[in-house]
Length: 83
Image 1 (cartoon, one colour):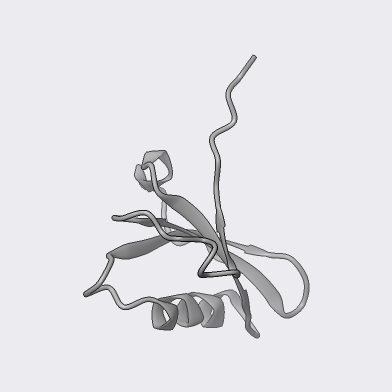
Image 2: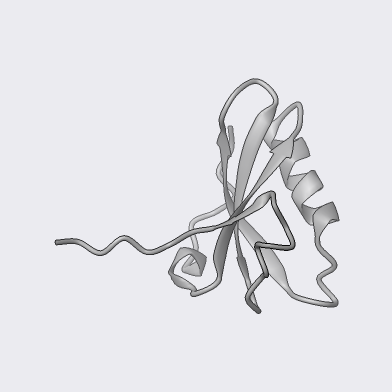
């Protein structure tokens, strides 16, 4: 698995994970890129996690909030506060 890059994007507000079926992390990122029309809402992937041989989670940030009720494979990432 390759890491897309270390950036400040994980600190942005609108962070999500999309679950995709793919043969590799590269194919997962391609599937992510094909899932969103960046002319409508700019998105950028910043990490990939492999759950099993064909299931990947692509972590990304979005310029505008995404209605996750309308996108069942998109999961919001919530901040966890240290106690």
